[in-house]
Structure formats: C-alpha cells, structure tokens
Amino acid sequence: MLALAALVLTSGCIGFLTGEETLTFESEPATADATVAGNAGYETNGTETFAVNRTLSFGGQERQIAASNHITTYEKTLDLGFFGEAKLGSFSVISTPAVEVAGQPRSPIGDYSNDDLIRLVDNRYQGLSDVDQVSSRNVQMLGQTANVTKYSATARFGGDEVDVYVHVTKVQHNEDFVVAIGLYPQQLDGEEGNVLELIRSVEHPSEA
Image (tube, rainbow, N blue to C red):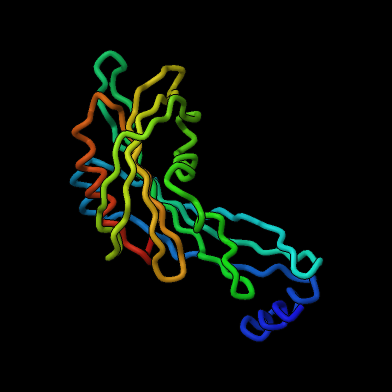
C-alpha cells in the first residue's frame, strides 16, 4: 500500500488508488526520416495509435493501467520477377511507454530480446516460419548503440511463401522504448543497406 501511496503523490491519480480510474501512459510517435525513406523507395502508410491495457497487483489489490502506443509503417514495391510487383518491403517503427509504476518497470517491451520482438512483425505476412538468426551488428539509432539482429524466415503473402530477411532492434529513448523492424525478400539482399539507413534515421519524438 505504501507503493500505491507513493504513486499517488507523484501522479496525483487518486482514482487509481481507489480503483475507480485507470492510470494512463502515452508514447511519443517515432518515424524514419522522410528524405531517407523516400531515397530508399519507401512510402509511409502513416502513424497509428493502439492501446494496451494491463491489470497490475499491489498488495493483493488489482489496478488497471492503459498504455497508448504508436506505430509508423513504410512499404516498398518490389519486383520479384515470377511473382510480379508487390508491396513486400516493409519497415515499421514502434514507440511504447517505458512504464514505471511505484518505481517498478511495467512495460513488457523492456524485457523483450530481439528474438521476442520479431513476433511484432507486420501481420500482413500472416506470420513467420523457419525463423533463424543469421547475424548481429551494432548500429547507431537515436544517438545510442542499438544491437540489430538479422533473421532468415519464410513469410506468407497472398497465398505464396516468400523467403525473407528480418532486421530487429530496440532502444530506450526519453520516456519510451523505440523498436525498429525491417523485412524484405531474401533475393533482394542488397536491401539490407536501405533498412540499416532507415534504422539510423529514426526520429523520436516526431511529428507523425
């Protein structure tokens, strides 16, 4: 109960203490630099907000928190020869609050490894199979050293299976965690350079 009282003093949320109100957090949007994205052939689909609600327990009492997150997505039309042209190149930037309640981290993203984050890949690919780690390297993102993991996988798109590479990374910046995910067909391995440049160009906070 002391932890809850301390939270009230810092947040002013009496309703959260009594269980009558939900404690809310909201991330700042994150995007890739528009010039870098355009030069790489990626077009943005805009930024969307999505909410995640969680129930926390304090001293045997349950309280509700709600986190508003942002995702900015980019797509690139690629020519796969036999498959023709399709929007198969994908880059996403996700920002989620680095939630702390009563001094305790409450954001699951904070504990996610890159192996966990790959599950956040754009669901337009109807999930991934045969996921294997290929390599790992450090890249600067938001002034920090971000560990970028490259995976090989098989994705389904429009009823067809496509072998893809996926690049995943995360940093904590200001009050948010920022995740970057890039995906493209393996036969276009030269696309890796574009994805790494997009990661380097991530801006946060951004006027989405």
